[in-house]
Amino acid sequence: MRQADMARSRPTFVCQNCGAVSSRWQGKCESCGEWNTIVEEGDAGPTGVRATRGRPFELEGLAGSDRAAARIGTDVDEFDRVTGGGFVPGSVLLLGGEPGIGKSTLLIQVCAALARRGARVIYISGEEAVAQVRMRAARLNLSDSPVELASATQVEDILATCASGKRATLIVIDSIQTMHTELVPSAPGTVTQVRASAQALLRHAKTTGSTIILVGHVTKDGQVAGPRVVEHMVDAVLSFEGDAAHHFRMLRASKNRFGATGEIGVFEMTGLGLAEVANPSALFLAGRDSTAPGAAVFAGMEGQRPMLIEIQALVAPTSLGTPRRAVVGFDQNRLSMILAVLEAHGGLKLGMHDVYLNVAGGLRADEPAGDLAAAAALVSSLTGAVLPPDQAFFGEIGLSGAIRPVIHAGMRLREAAKLGFHQAVLAQAQQINDDDRRAGLALRPCADVGQLVATIAQTAPRKQARD
Ligand code: TYD
Ligand code: MG
Image (cartoon, rainbow, N blue to C red; front, side, top):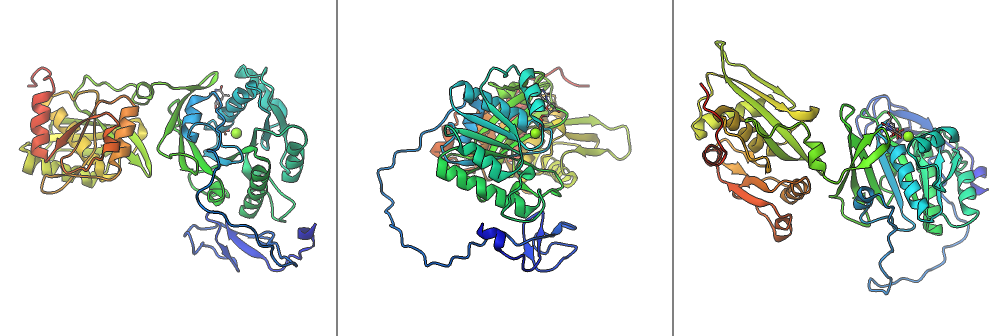
């Protein structure tokens, strides 16, 4: 092979976090600022030095008669929802997530469902032995599905195997970090190997029309050669997320060349694998006591991702000289500011009260857009007025007491609607376009904290008066 002849000229140093290439070793990557991530690797891969001149090819116009790519549904609806209605033939998807979150479980379920429909499905595990994958399948009652299994890590062998026989509809590679290709000399798991392996698989998908799903482990500290380096190559990037203390799992698309990225798929990890959750609000806000005062649901965003978060407040008369202000999952300074604004412009007297603010589920609400929900929870706790359980809040509070618009209103509204909410309290100045209005939520615009306090006091049914 041509690549094999290529001499290993100079060593290259590649940051395992961001993929930046430098000519010498450094303790800190100049590109991403991470420490101890630079590793010596071989040549950055086949550069494809050509002896011949290029052949011209025909260029085409934008208008054409191509039909929309057919979608391949998997029967796992929550999964299809995120991919945009099923796989597009010849596409490559990256499924990222922390180890142990359930990526392999999800994919064996997707594979089994698709294979049961008669498609050829190949599942290659680079991490587990065939027996382990079989054991999992047996536990999930999937043994009868004609999925073709192998434990392998050599990309060329895998592609040769896939190329023989009927064209595979779906090939799962679990995981891309365990794959290695002969094309580059570096060790498995390095950025160069991950990238070159992904490229070889990508070529296979484009030429054969098989869909390939690459599994990629992501760790919180980003020390492992991240699948982030292949994100730009693939057609869709899905991430599987969840909290170790909870059973719910979320599938999101952060990139999708063939569909929208706002959709989320919700699953619950059970003893029998991942169950699709038809009504996520019940699960996600489970344990929420919507009959008690002091809780408000914040329609928040995690980066580009909408997420509903319950903010709980407790406002109680203090027994101390200096009242306490404590927060969990919320910014202390923002709480101080909100309290000051509620006193100055909302007419509340909080100087003799302890104030506790907690974000449920171990989540964090760091966005300024969470101000309105926090303020609503505080007012609710102080007055004993229960907030409507189907109400979600988002908006920033300014020092003047005005509620200010925030970005991504549409995504917040759609997420709230998806999770079963019917009303949204937001800034009066928030621009809502027709598309966002179609989320179907009743909008309750609020101009300032004075109006917020008045509305909560009058619309919510009062609990028994406090002493
Ligand atoms: P796995 O799919 O192996 O995670 P990943 O591939 O992302 O590393 O899932 C691992 C976890 O899922 C493991 O801790 C056990 C749990 N699990 C269940 O709770 N129920 C099940 O039916 C299965 C198969 C796994
Ligand atoms: Mg796995």
